[in-house]
Image (cartoon, rainbow over all chains, first blue to last red; front, side, top):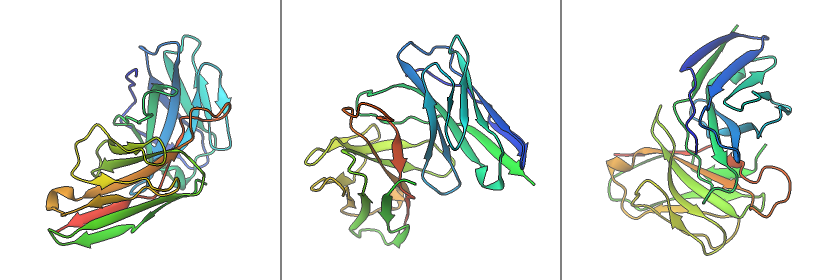
Length: 112
Length: 118
């Protein structure tokens, strides 16, 4: 699976959009971009995933560049409860036994 | 919200005790996983299962064992707990590859069990 690079930390004001970047310059054609987050002391939570088209669900939007070398997770109206570590993962669907490998992620702090 | 449960949430136990961490899911998922995570550190896969009667060891060597007698249940057992086993244990499940649409590799996690061995 391709390696990803994320900034170690970001701040966002409550009610504003949080834009979390991820670089995955070695991504291959059959690899998807997944985003998970982990709130302190809880299990990771799936947010969204995509291949090459932009995706949106009730939690967030995922914008993938045309060359697929980077992506941005957008939380449109961040709340205090969105404070968490956000992980960007690149992996092939159906890979081996499907294990997840999280890097260091981005610590997002949403402040009032 | 994912329907995957872990008990207990917190466990403090003495060295040498046998413990079983429970994990159950009501989503009918075939694949289940156990991860170990220390505070501020990465997830490490210690066990996984493709379905009933299937269990495999993950990347991180662990003295724990697992069983999968029923689809919804994937307990983890430590025969003799030691202080080095102190960690958070996270259970997850995902849908099978055969699902034609949706998130075949999306893993849903339980809330975790924080184990402290004294």
